[in-house]
Amino acid sequence: MNANILTRNNVKIFGTGKQPLVFAHGFGCDQNMWRFVTPAFAEAYQIVLFDYVGSGKSDLAAYNSARYSHLSGYAQDINDIVDSLGLEDIIFVGHSVSSVIGMLASLKKPERFQQLIMVGPSPRYINDPPDYVGGFERADIEGLFAMMDKNYLGWASFLAPAIMQNPEKPELSNELKDSFCSTDPVIARQFAQATFFSDNREDLAKVQVPSLILQCTDDIIAPLVVGEYLHQHLPQSTLRVLKATGHCPHLSHPDETITVIKDYLRDMASD
Image (tube, rainbow, N blue to C red; front, side, top):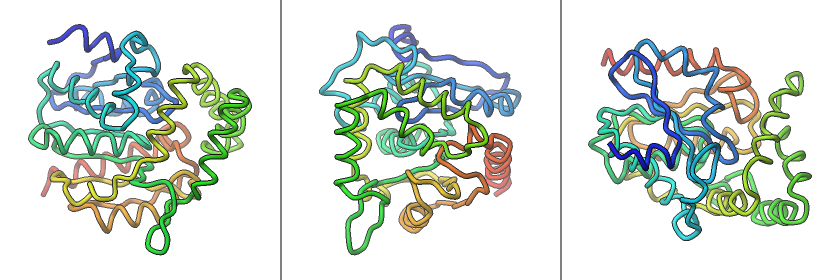
């Protein structure tokens, strides 16, 4: 066990089960975002939480701009943790961009991963006409980056409620905004570029493990058409469209998120 890696990524482990259930947070977030979901799995699984380098309570001194200019650098974080803990038969749960990061990690070590659970995933955020709709024009993304550079706090205040939806729960939007603002703006900018300019469509056909795609209703980051595209191009995939709105169902609708994941894992175990 490499204590340096566990400290670097602020790895936390709990639960009384043996099979590892690894939860990975999305852009601008940290492991605390899973707090409403993980207790429901702690009795049956070994829960593994972590922060990517540059996020949460990770070791900021370990941040390397070259490594983390691409999603593959974050995938390496995952596989470093996997190797350090000697994890096998992993069920990986990734939110947003972490769905693809986990997929990339599984391509490097398919023998270690049993299933991928993708919450609000997207293999490509930018539209690529005529055959692909990602939800954004390149100019939209560049506009967000310009806002980020000019007024980071204003960018966070604008984006958080749009991502979260669920205006009847303003505390969730405020939490996401605060999470954005707690991240170093330079690191956040680079992670955003690695995320929103990525294109991993060609990687989908290479995936060797079964996957569950959790698609939310009314999600501006990953619209329904993206979930359908993933389901069509990802081998051994299952698509479940949630009643939950927004992009963060593990925060806004944890009970539904838990139920759908548990149903999927039970079905897979019985096959």
